[in-house]
Image (cartoon, rainbow, N blue to C red; front, side):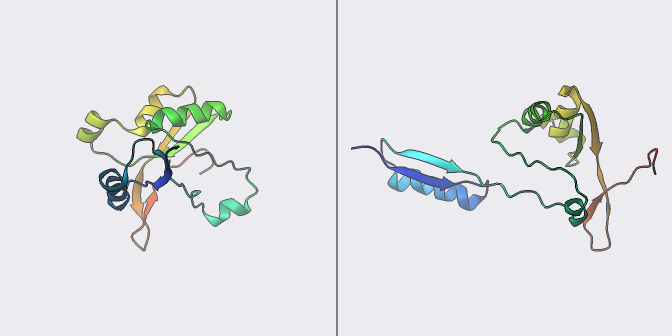
Length: 136
């Protein structure tokens, strides 16, 4: 008799981890095959982006190393530049953990722009700081 095939959605939450642990503690059998699902919603984009006529491609893939995955995606999809935000890790955390943006900056062969979050709008939402450029 073949084993069971069981779907377990994991999203990093304590609830999902508890469900996985419950499976292990209560119903796991030798021969079981698990399908671990992590569902990604497409990122929400400002409405003006959708109306602007940009060609957009949504790419999602599993990876334990997001920095490496982003460098690889940029290369595979033929990008010329990477523009990304930063979570604002403190210096100590960044020294021990590294950061995705640091990895991309130092390992991509493309131009990389890191946009820090510094400003908040009137509702208290964090907004990217704005920098002047040639067209500003």
